[in-house]
Amino acid sequence: MASDPPRGQRGSGSGSRSNGSGSGSGSLEQAGLPEERKPQSDEARSAFTPPLGVPLPPPPEEEHPTSEFALPEGLRAEGPAEPEGSAFAPPGSTTGQTPLPGGAFTPPHGIPALSLTKEAPWQDRMRTMLRMPIHERPVPERAERTEEEGGGPAAPRVLDLTLRIGEILLAGGEGAEDVEAAMFGVAHAYGLERVEPTVTFTLLSISYQPSLVEDPLTASRTVRRRGVDYTRLSAVFRLVDEITSEGISLEEAYRGLAEIRRNRHPFPSWALTISSGLLSGAASMLVGGGTLVFIAAAIGSMLGDRLAWLASARGLPEFYQFVVAAMPPAGMGLLFALAHSNVQSSAVITGGLFALIPGRALVASVQDGLTGYYITASARLLEVGYLIVGIVVGVLSVLYIGLQFDPGLQRLNPEQALRLYNEPVVQTVASMLLALAFCVLLQQERHTVAFATLNGGVAWVVYGALTATAHFNAVPSTAIAAGLVGLFGQLLSRYRYASALPYVTAAIGPLLPGSATYFGLLNFAQGNLLEGFSSLIKAASLALAIAVGVNLGSEVARLFLRVPGITEAGAGRRAAKRTRGF
Image (cartoon, rainbow, N blue to C red):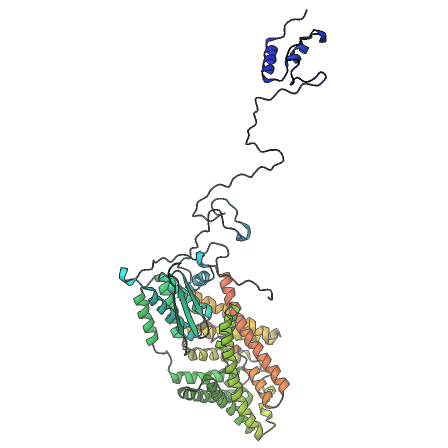
């Protein structure tokens, strides 16, 4: 006789009935009742009871309930949420985050503010800010105030001071990028945040917008006269450094600018004339001239300098000043050639051309072109072209007259003395003397003369070693030597927080293509047009090699010297993107 099912099974059967699962029949089968003795209840005929022969479904797992927010099968779960970091810390620095590749998207906690310390040179700080979009530039430390509120600088006066400083720099031969950086630094130091300076060859302008709802202020200034005075240029650089780093008042800045304008040139006009003679004499020694050649080249150059001063006093354009300045050196060499003396007349003319070739303007034009100021670069290069044409006209006029007296003039043949001359000691001393004379002509400060003179000697030693010892071509040798000049000049300028021009312009004097220019002019005068064009193309190649080398050396110095205060990658001067030819 079968016994009653256990209590737990009855409870399970009752629980199953309450859930409508039909587990009661399952409990009867477990009790061992025959099929014909099963009770025919309403539960047995329930629509939810599985038919005979169909297995029962498994009981529900009540101890593991499923949430309605659970992720359905087939979907990928999200990664862990990034921990929140400080709003003042750049992404990836202290919060453990990884910066977005390429910086294409805004970081989740915003773009960190760029901080440029005042221990860095102001040129680097201002170049960095100029290449940044306006909305990313750091806010000026000084809040703009009007004269009625607290005696602070008003916007029109700041713009006027900015233009006056830019005018002196541009008239002194400074590159367009450095002029813009100086103008932006002055305006930013006095609280003008939204300013945009613009520099062309003769026009300076600056625009300031106080806010998005106020009218902008624009001022401009035209540079009509240019003069070479690197002492004044260095003084302006120091004034800009005091404004941007030390925070002097606007009145003090105006007073300092007035003192700079009142200061006289460090060297009188007679010293400039003597330096012009020394420069030509030293250049003649570079190409094989002796003592008599040195004296003849110096006398011819000094006569040309005095004639140029006379033409300038009469108001003649600079083109005609170069024409009359080129005639005396050429005439001096022609006289020695007509006298059939043993003096190397070709070296006399070549030395005179060294003092006239506009190397400073050429370097500035190529520098502006390489840094993206194409309008200013084109204007400077056109100026160089006109000055060279003036030299050509002056020299060719004299040579043509000489050829009428003696069609041969074999003593003007450059091959007689300028081909195989190689005296390292004499040429090194001559190159340093040439650089020294250039320093006086450029009105440099006395403490910069020694550095520029030494830099010029190093440039010639490198050039001579590459051409005479390593047998390099003259063009790459010139570019390498000029690159070292630019590198050393940039290092010295950064060390002294000054312009690089006083350390660079005079040092490239020994590398100027005086010989190639003379060869081309002589061949033109003799009717050898093909050889003349070949020599002039070589002279142009050497001049461009000098300019590119100087600029490349400066960029290398900026590339490897890290600016303090810039922690963001790519926060330095931003370069232009390639146009890929279109």
